[in-house]
Amino acid sequence: MTAPQSSQALRWFAAAIVLANGFFPALWILATSFKNEVELTAKPITWWPENPVLTNYIAAFKDQPLPVYLMNSAIVALLSMALSLFVATLAAYAIARLRLKHRQLILTTIIAVSMFPLVTLMVPLFEIMRGLDLLNSYWALVFPYTVLNLPVCTLVLVSFFQEIPRDLENAAMIDGCTRLGALWRVVVPLAAPGVFTAGTLAFVNAWDEFLLSLSMNSAVAYRTLPVGIQMYQGEYAFPWPTISAALVIGLVPVVIVILLFQERVVSGLTAGGLKG
Amino acid sequence: MSTRSLRDRMLDPSDRALALLLLSPAIVLILAIVAWPVAKLLANSVMDVRLSQGVPVRFVGLENYAAALADGMFWRAVRNTMIIVVVTVPGALVVGLALALLANMPFRSRGPIRLALLLPWAMPLAFVGLIFAWFFHSEYGIVNDVIRRLGYTPQIWFNSPALTLAAICIATIWKTSSFMALILLAGLQTIPNSLYEAAEVDGASKWTQFREITLPLLVPSMLVALIFRTLTAIQSFDIPFSMPGPGEETQTLAMYIQQQAVDYLDLGYGSAVAVFMFLLSMATTWVYLRYIRGDER
Image (cartoon, rainbow over all chains, first blue to last red; front, side, top):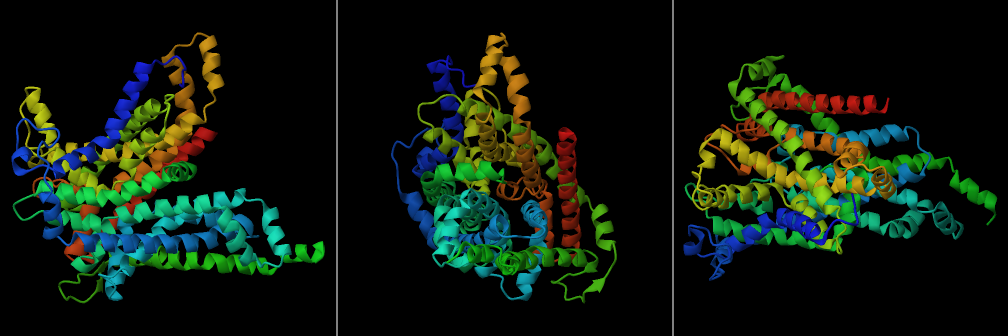
């Protein structure tokens, strides 16, 4: 419906709706995070803080160990991203390039894993991690997140590997490279866009995960951000401006990632028709 | 080096061994994190495993399943989950389709539009739950502010299970419709413009073009997106957890499982309920796949 006669006004209207829908909640939290007590409780609501204050940000760092949560989230997300990229690269190369019996079965298994309800895995994983004394550790999250992201990463990488002409690989092998040497020196660098796509999806999925994190890592020292941010609420009070400030800080990494990799993410999401 | 020896290397019988070697880390991880836990889940579901009580683990057959079927809290959780599925899956599809059609207009720069669709997708569900809980705050929330300005009575949203579920559904639709829109937008962009031009020549109205060209050609992208949306809706946890209603009235199936297994350490019962959820997911996938195959025939 890309009708060329669609008027300028209609286009502005469409853009306004899409932009407002996408950005309003984040902007509203941003506005709330700068409001002082008076403006917060003003009726009718003030849209933008007239006397912006930074006290909520100070409180966000004082009331909860926000840097610890951020650090934990970053460690878990980056470790699981690196691990899923490594494992998925090997698997995707085998699927895309090597003579393989049951190729279809392997792909079906991978897709089946991606449809598996995480909640049902949580119960036995909790017991296993408890038995291994791994509750409250990075590994209790890194391994499950790696598997969680394996299907997405593998499917994205398979489609990118298949695009790379075999001749380039063969040329490298004529020059004396082994197959694995050709994989690391030729195929992976050429598939760099695919690696970035898969990596971004893996990072965002791990950064956002809540249920496993809540169940496995209840200790403050290993708590990740989505769980930690729920801890600002006291027994009776819900300090919304402080929570807003913490949410804004927690959103910064997400915004940076989608700003940097927006085209990669869109192509990755739509290529595989994967879950979100 | 001759071509022959190169071909030998390319078709090396050790290729198959190499393939297995390359696949082995993935296989080991899937066995450890999916297959083994699933076996454990099934085993636990027919056992009495209460870690907090110090009672010895024993085989109880289908007692946990029978207990679930007779448990009002289980059925309440099923009902809440089904409400979320039935409201948010079509809701996300309709809103997502509207966003996709709007975003598909010929804008001069696509960057901001793309970011507006990506931000809800990338935002953690737990954040979305908190943000919408603030929107629906009874005193200072923006929703009640708008209601007051329009001259209606503001609601205490989180005092009523029905209103809490409504707020949860709105938050869920907002969070998930953008992903739907991205998938549908990609589908829209594969529809050749010539189809619309031909329809234009034939004098078809915009609405007819939408019904006869756009919708049918979007069905494949919709089905893929709908399968995943339905499966994730069945597992709803983060948003309902962050937007609690009165008591445990708005508990979902996933929240009930987590409470039983992690908070009460009743792994036997929690596993049985989890098996029910697993069956529900399988049934959903089966229905969709049947529909897709029926469609191709």
